[in-house]
Amino acid sequence: VLDNNLNHRNNYVVPLGVDSDIFYPRTNNSETTTYLHVGKTEHRKSSHEIVKIFNKTFKHTDNVKLQLAWTSVFNSPNVQAEWDRFAKSFPISPCVEVIPRLDSVVDVAELMRNCDAVISLSKAEGFNYPILEGMASNKKVIATRCTAQTEFCDYSNCYLVDVDKKIIANDGV
Image 1 (cartoon, rainbow, N blue to C red):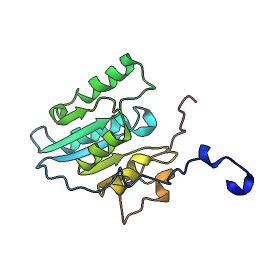
Image 2: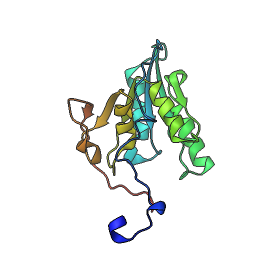
Image 3: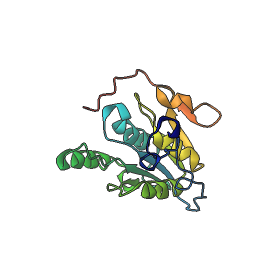
């Protein structure tokens, strides 16, 4: 910056990955095993599949919880309400909690610290911060073995799931 005569007061260093002052390990002492999904509600994020798999894997009497932090600024209130109704349409629904839109990354970090595992079954991803944030919070991670997260996820630090096919990421941008 200084070598190129740029005003250093207008430049900031952005950490690669996650901020360890915000995302850090803490043991979850709850007797309920909590799985957390953070991400937009869309096909490539496998939002539907996560709820369906949770429903097939567990019964509503099991001591588990699925938290869905999936409220998206890209969804109209009606579309978001459809996703939330879908999540509550299964027998497992008493164990499913839809998290309202969070105000800050600090709120996301607190959710991470209070869960046992982070789930991301994305079929197309540019980076996948929630997985890296989960790892920084020392949580078990369940992720797909495809696209960007394979740069830092492997069988030594993550439970990897194969996908049938990848899809094109289209965020409408």
